[in-house]
Length: 370
Image 1 (cartoon, one colour):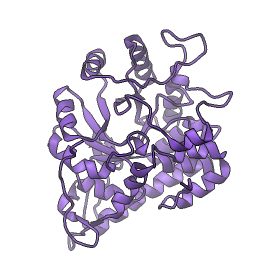
Image 2 (tube, helix red, strand yellow):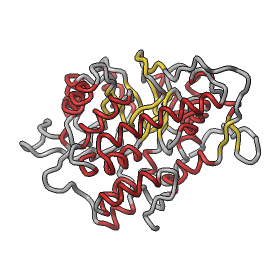
Image 3 (cartoon, one colour):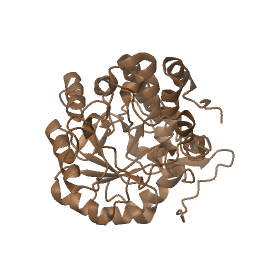
Image 4 (tube, helix red, strand yellow):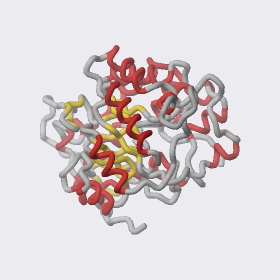
């Protein structure tokens, strides 16, 4: 393993690498095991092509979408990633301001190095209507989960993104090689401070434990915030989630950081979208790097897509300005691709426009068996 990015984010990753200690760069860049799932998230998009439609006009295009009763300027959001202050001193606050300036919703992580209250405040400084969601891991102590939900509500988050693909930590090869297992002095997972059962001033560890559907039902009963289930890959889990009252699903293999044998997110997307059958929005993250990736995911059933590592690269390389410029450019790239595909709005992109590169065959929508 070289630890070197050679994909389409190379122009972002290389300046970030030069700014970061190797172990911090590897923490962001790395995946589980042999990093097969990590690579496949991007490679899977490379195996797909878009069939454009022609003679449909397009001067009146709009990239806006509706997600959980909010209008978003584009089908794009910032996925939750940890430890932004490892990438830049201003950390999640800079990311929040940049996303708000670019008109892109943000999911702030429970493992953030800036508290959810401060993240939301930074976003709202830039845009009073900025959309911020809070990513949550269910905790084995219910009172800890309850307090985290209360903090997100008080801060003004408009949804909870519940990550459910982590009964145990993935074996992240680069971190094991580097001996990276804790934040440096002066940084902490701020959302985990001063919780029930914690020592004063010391954050609790992020929980990795085998939560069940009963735990999710208890969460559903204690909050009116919309619940987005993150980490769904199997269509049967998607069906159960809808039956259990989830408000949206986020198809994700955790950026290739959990099960290395998992399929690429975009490969799992069509079967999940078919299982949901439009009853709730389906979101997706993993490997999205360009406007054509966004268009492909939307054509295969996603309402919007999340961006993870490229935001961290932009933050490390050029701070808040870098994140804003990157997200703004990505929005513009999607609008350009939408026009070339013959679309007026994201909903015009359809599954028959996605084919296997080199064959012009539509990709299989078979259900995973594991």
